[in-house]
Image 1 (cartoon, rainbow over the protein chains, first blue to last red):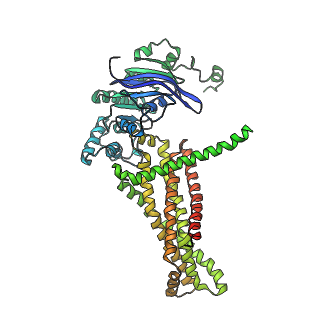
Image 2: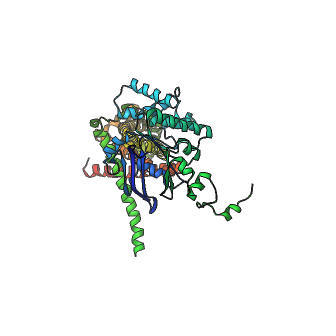
Image 3: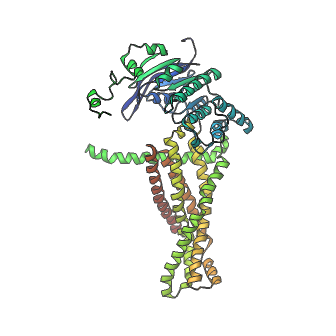
Length: 265
Length: 265
């Protein structure tokens, strides 16, 4: 694995919000072509780490590299050029409300290329068929279900043929079957388009279905990085509690007394 | 003592930050309108025309009603005073001059601020809380260029048009009272209306509406982009947007009128 080229490298990353340290000294590498999953509890800094990788947030200290180029010190213009090589799928899909499905997918192409509208139309249909959404071109986002919106968001993310796709909670709020479909889609797209994927999730089934490597974050620290098997057989009590979803363990959200005092159903 | 300075300093710093943010938004918007075409990123004509229909055409009825009845009220109130002096005929010129110089531009701007300013904040604000603004930024699409610049161009064109319509509606309101209630000869009324109304009265009024258009769009967009905290946040910022626009319109009206007044225009 280590002889593969590094797509994204995060070095000594620190970020604080209002005096609260959200990320503390994060070091990790994402290899080209792999599906790298960032997992951890709510508020552990997963999405913040992802947004540092996309260049949306500037760190307090530390660096993020994309193919050896430091993103964190780039001018806005250079950053915009790099961003065109990224795609991002959002937790809420983030489709523009007043645009149809086709207009949403064609948006980055219309903004950044001089392609003929007919060519753009073909690309849009091709991308939509890759996510199984062909025939829905003229619908508005409000007419789609959660899973369909996610798939259109994914088609938009891959519209510009990116090298890296970032997924923020791709299966949050979806039923288990649709979640499995989205996971399969992520795997298919990686294989067909030779993408590097960075996925933020706390859905354990997804993690073991799609990940080549996993990083477990806890309170802004890297707890462990490894393959899904290494994570599964981890000796770390926090990792084990998180995988099993136990109430009792080192992560203590509500103490035992207050849990017992809850009214019985 | 420290506490006193801290209490004093915090709101001052907050205000400075608001002003900085507002200046940044204003400069960026004007930058994209003026220099966008040279960077191959002009304001999209289709978006601007759609906005013109929404901001201009769909505001015609409300502007007509508000200004027509203002003209009616103004004529009745001035007739009440002028009849004591035997100068009822001057209702025509008093109505037309005060509508064109002052009430037309200001009331039209206030109506449009209520309708369009609120819509701009609600639209951009809900896009902000639903990650759509972040999605645009991730696609390397500048949200100020994409969302704010077309709106400013549109209202900059449409508000003066609406003001002219408002002026005519107000004069018509005065005409109805003057001719049908006060019994002034229709021909004489129209003649007196334009006898004391100079071109200067019209363009000083219209010049204000350009300033008001900038205030409505930039305040609306600024509050929209600052929105956080879900639906409650959208409601809160929409209210702030309308209230701020109202106050700034009146203050700007006072400043522009002052400039004309002290320069004897």
